[in-house]
Amino acid sequence: MKNAYAAAQVTQTEVPTDQGEANVRSVQNQTMSLLARRRNDYDVTNAVQVSCPEAVGAAVQEIYSKLYPRAAVRPLEQAFSDFGRMFRGEDPRFHGCDTTYHDMQHSLDVTLACARHIDGFERSQRPAERLGAKRAAVGIITALYHDVGYLRSTHDHTHLQGAEYTRVHVSRGGEFLADYLKQLGLGSEASIARRMIHYTGYERDINRIRLGDERYTRLGHLIGTSDLTAQMADRCYLEKCRDRLYDEFVVGGVARRTLPDGRQMVLYSSPRDLLEKTPGFYAMTLRDRLEGTFASAYQYAARHFGGMHLYMDSVRENLKHLEKVLKENDWSLLRRKPKCFTADNMHWSLPVTRAGGHAHAAHARRA
Ligand SMILES: [Zn+2]
Image (cartoon, rainbow, N blue to C red):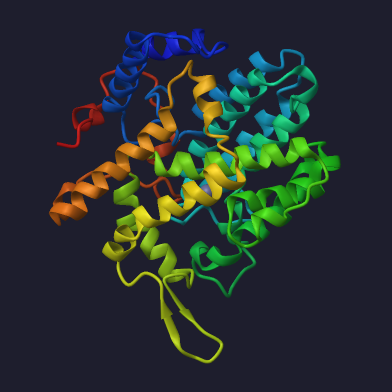
């Protein structure tokens, strides 16, 4: 596994355009072999433990430093360390993360995906069109904090759960981020980041976000793409939709809405109903966002991985499995049991350092 990933990294600077069928098959085999061995709280390469801020921080900084050898990594180091403290509930200003779907693993998985998409993008552009070190750092920090709006202030006595902020969490995150970037010495980018974060949400029309800088707009597409593809590529995406996302939607007032005339509109009536609507959600997301507004920015992950479409292939695997569940009406096929990385579950603070020998490896295959 590690070797296949290392090989993919070595070749990441060139996308083969004239490779023969054998090479295409070899890339596909490599992809399938990586995905088959993946552990629940690891990234699509099964090499980075995405429940651990230190592991993801190190992986992201490595990508960043290779891309921009002269840029300072201090703001990124600080951002990861502050993120760990906030989400674990060690920052006295905030309650720790308590949203079970939008947990720490989700934010970290998205951030790693974002760094990889940025890497692929930068390596595909002419020098004058690259984002550059500063925008890239702002993009990575925005991805890391894109769901910070779910955290409750310790002075907040009206909300009992972070999920109550579902419908406004992106705007809240933007406010936090604008202030936080000033603390990191990136105050000049605060106003742009406050608007750019909306590419991860549904609170604003993403086609009407004006950043006044084409490269930031493209960066917003990379962040939005990473948010969607990393979560849908999660090894336990389907189980998390059923066991966690539906509950968040109920608490957040998304599953049922009260219309101005007092009537109730039911969007999702049960966890099963949410999963039954997931293929439709994906089709719409692919059309309107991934291949629409975001202009197929997901391709840049393959540039990073030497031709392997690890995120999109994982998404398609999940959707294929969901189709089987729906067709056979056999919900027992969703049997994965992912850990939850909220502040109450402190086990995630311990990174796994030993190579191999991991307990979940035995559960690598669904069947
Ligand atoms: Zn998210």
